[in-house]
Image (cartoon, rainbow over all chains, first blue to last red):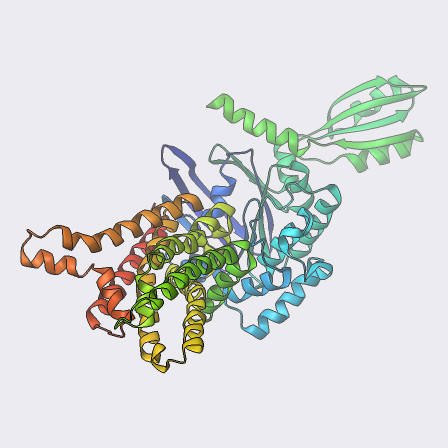
Length: 319
Length: 250
């Protein structure tokens, strides 16, 4: 048992009647991380989260939250988890404050403590204007925040959010994201989504789930490196083409280059470095030394979308 | 324990926050009113050596209230939470299954008792206008309510079971009604099957709800029906608990 591990999942298999939702996945999540579970619909995200939260039993495999088995020590494990299911179900007939207080009491907080915590999460989630309103009369954005406040109310060590930003408008998405980001460090967060930029913006680690298997697990940057192999840098430089080409030929870090004229005397150079090397500063200093003019220097990044498509495609072809 | 009371309060709140609770009470009140009218009619006829509560019980609406109200009161308990998904948020908090089942049943029972309170008003009315001190004996009223609660307990437990096995409130109500009606019919079985051996008759006599209820309304509290109804309620609630737990090994 490792004390720095918040989630340990080993060979988790879940079979429903007639189909296998999870085909033996394993992963660990360290304390304080914000981890994104990425996958298309039906990839097994919700199933994974339901098992972690103790709602569904696993067919086989070991799942521990902070060292506690979610099946045999279910009650203790559930005490440590704040879970917001998909579609964020709430008691629509209750008022916001009453609901949060009810939830806090259910999660074992004393009356006094629950009052304090409800006040804290109401401020934290921006619900101060609607505490007396009936949940059924709230907009979707507010309801989502009520769901988040519920997940946070008992100060859980682990927060599990199943598609927390689904169906929200861009402003609401931003506020929810910043809220999630603010939780990093003090809480461990596992969130699922099929919106890729969301993971890029909020998560320190990504798990790509596809067809009940984990295809990739790394930091967003690590995935970039893994995917791109050797990274490419694009620079637009104003200089004679022959001189530019001669220059890059002399730089040993540049493995490959391609120079094409754009407009005026500018040329667009696509420079491929050797594996893992970042040659952006090198390019800058080289250009500076020669007294050329440069108007753009970027690293062409694989978006998470490319990575996701590539990873899942490889699997589809393999299957 | 405080989790249990929190849940009971929430479930009771659920009845009174929604229109359903008031509709149930209004319908029950309507049927009670009809019973009251019939009861007054009976009072006008020649004097009978029966209590007021027994007169009330003898009207056909009495059983209708119990048979219809119980499944409607209980249908939402599990089925609605499943349908809206709040079941998932409930079961992922550190509550025990037994607390959930007990709390939901308690809330339904409390609501059911509240629903029956207008009966007291009917009895008081009669007493007020007849000046007959014997019309309303405390002991008789208490034993009548004991009978109502004991019978209701079984019917509500059956309704809980119906609600626990499905996601649909309508289906839950139908199951509850079906089980309740079957239980009620069993009370007539003893009379129909005369040709049976003594122990079978003895067994079926336990199901004689109508006779037992008549005793209760006369102020006779026999321990046999009390034990019978309590144990049957616990048995059905235990089955409900098993259904709820089945999620963990399915």
